[in-house]
Image (cartoon, rainbow over all chains, first blue to last red; front, side, top):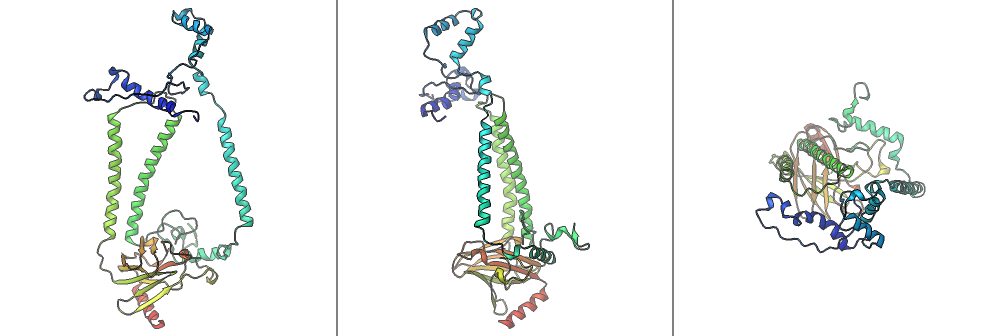
Amino acid sequence: MLRLTSGRLGSLLARRPTACLTSSSRARMLSQQSHEVSETVDMSRPMYYDRLDSPLPDKPYKDVLSDAEQSLKQKEKGPWAELTNEEKVALYRLMFSQTYAEMKAPTGEWKTVVGGIFLFLGFTGLVVWWQRIYVYPPHPRTVDEDWQAMQLQRMLDMRINPVQGFSAKWDYERNQWK
Amino acid sequence: MAHPSQLGFQDAASPVMEELLHFHDHTLMIVFLISTLVLYIIVAMVTTKLTNKFILDSQEIEIIWTLLPALILILIALPSLRILYLMDEINDPHLTIKAMGHQWYWSYEYTDYEDLGFDSYMIPTQDLTPGQFRLLETDHRMVIPVESPVRVLVSADDVLHSWAVPSLGIKMDAVPGRLNQTAFITSRPGVFYGQCSEICGANHSFMPIVVEAVPLEHFENWSSLMLEDA
């Protein structure tokens, strides 16, 4: 993707949808026959690409053919039943770089990505651990167990959130959580 | 106040806050539905085996996905505006209190009958008695009679502050030189906590608000005591 020039990208994005609109007037939608549709001129250069969702790239994979390949292309103009299997495969490889099976083949890239994520998470965990030991100030005394217990009792006595929230979940008759 | 690790709203202590809770439930349900639909569409798009994906035109679905969001927005806007106007209704308050924001405490003035005024400073952590709430308790609370409409005029003495009490559904900016009015009525007695909600300097996080709603006789006793002490 990084090696795409803007011209090539334009070709990739512009040609396929606009090709449907401008290439054949018979393909125009009913809705568009009643008014003028301005001509869109595609000035991008044809490029080759392997994409699952676009089966026919702008140009063949191999443009410059050796003599043997050129004679094979000539033979392709005749009846295809006369082509051997190897010739058919060779013609395919002239036209396309990868088969659909090759395009869909798993790459294992996900393992690198997931591994990298875990690596960074682990590193962050180490940094946080170091901070807890060397940087954090001491806890305020209100976080101590006994203070929290007294605070909880005070919240219940004050009926904090008695409708659906905190005190609503306490059974005052039996002195326990519901 | 919120209990530790609370995620949702505090229980409502005023009718307006109850309305806001219901509105939030309604809107959040719509939001969850839309988000689930979008997530499903994203997953379907990413995992599809189809290669012909460039359908260029379809009037029917375009009509649907234009009208349906408009309808959803109307369904959200109508309750929203209803509550907006509800909050501004004339409610004939029994009591008017002025809440003035200072750096870094609140002061309350009850001047309807007598001249009662006092400051409300946060109790520092080292001065708390065991069981009190850190950063929330104040030395003097704003005491009001329960189930009585109360008007609060919020202003500030120096910089911007904001007077907020979540369980009453109130947040009103305290602007120097300006009087902002808000009103509420408490449906139940209790103590309701809030915190300053506009950055106002070093101790912005340390100037809480405590509203205590008590029966009228208690309120009268309290105000007499406060006037004697003053």
